[in-house]
Image (cartoon, rainbow, N blue to C red; front, side):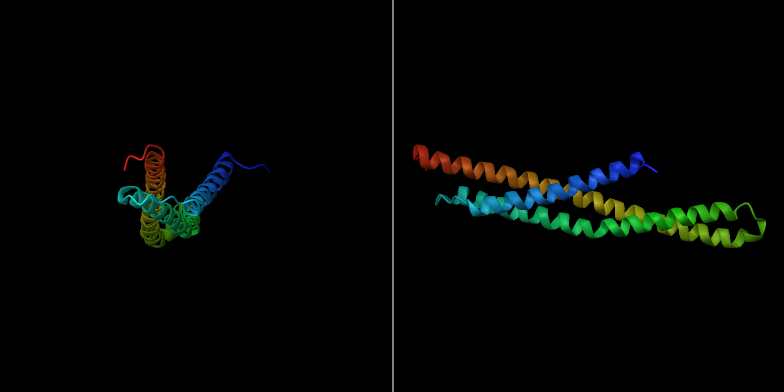
Amino acid sequence: MGKTNLEIAQEFQEKIELYFVALTFTIAGFAIQSGKFSGWPLGDSLEALSWISFFVSGIVAMSRFEYIPVARRLYDKTEKRRIELDNYETNPDYVTSVNKGRKRLNSEVSKRVQIEKTLDRKYLWQKIFFIAGLIFLLCARILYQLKETYKLF
């Protein structure tokens, strides 16, 4: 049987996330390897801030990857419990167990929602630090070129 659109989308998203982390660490490595210090405090600070931003972006991404399997397992568990409870609702003998099961399901769903919010926040911070790293690096290199070319500072 072929893959569903959801499965294809999830695989694609996973590939993008791994590519983004690899890109972050690659740019950080190149920035550190080709670091340009001009002796001017602003330019040097921006260079160092870019390194730190890339590093933090990569670390946030790696910590985010820890939560993804947990979120998927919890999603699977809640979906199985929901199907199970739907099957029990048709039998009146199981009313009390269904009520207990619903409470447990609600608790698991709230945990799942909390983990998903954590994942979204981490992804946002990952992108913010990545973009900040690019801006800091670009500004630092522009200042270095201005200093070297025009002897401005």
